[in-house]
Image (cartoon, rainbow, N blue to C red):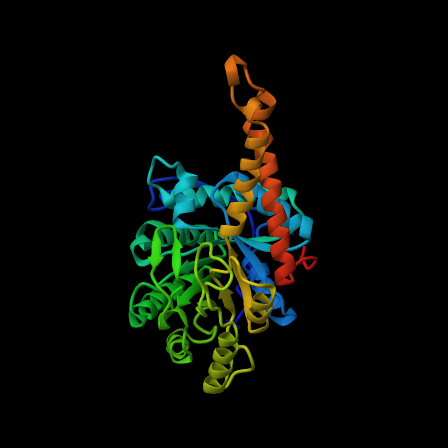
Length: 375
């Protein structure tokens, strides 16, 4: 939402102890130009996208390799972007045999803060899709961790968090958002909310079928605006649904209506007396969307588009190709010893990262952020 800019904060080395998730964590920040966006830089990123008619790719990462791939792709495209992690991704970062998603998310953030220093672009950190059952062990501990950092004069660890209330009644969705938003404002972070239902499945959260819930209404959004304001109570961005479906699908199987976003923007502007396109919007479930659908969504106020399925496929497809082409090197066939240079995970890992990076470049070109890094 268009609202006041977050207050400026200085940088330093900060230890956050006892974060409510059983771990200690260090966040590292240094220098005037930060590779991980400050609150001011993130707000400026979103404002520039809105004013310039483009959007940033928000790419899910679940490993250090996927983080590096995103940073590589954004750099090759000359684009800033958003790195985000889901509950499942955070679980994986923590170690797949343990349950520690807040720990995993903090490890993800610490890794990005360090390695991003080598790349000449700016990235923001975001937590994606947090349904109600995951609030207590995912987003809320992370907000608490940032509160400790901010109290010590630093920046929030994550620049934005998503509360996904799509599985609960709208009234409850709004009520929980109202509880979270003041805490986000206090740490100069941005809240993402979902109004409506994105179909398909992501990280075990599944919505069946295609029905009216897949298309957000202006009346629903008006209730959210009445409760959360338009930036005065804290900045928020909105994932409105216009037929979106998570996961992979063949063209024609999903009926996207990106024109609906324009209708909602106009309706809210008329009802609340704002300028055109008062909402900062997020595009979920975009895999398989056409260039025309993406362009229309961006023209109607989308400033952030989530990308996960396509980058996952790009990564794994390249690994599969390498394994098939080098099977007698990665396997000890017929009593041979194989080829260490082939089965070394770095050999195929570099190929996978570059393949994923190429898909990131494609996303920046589709969204119009290529060549527009503020760094």
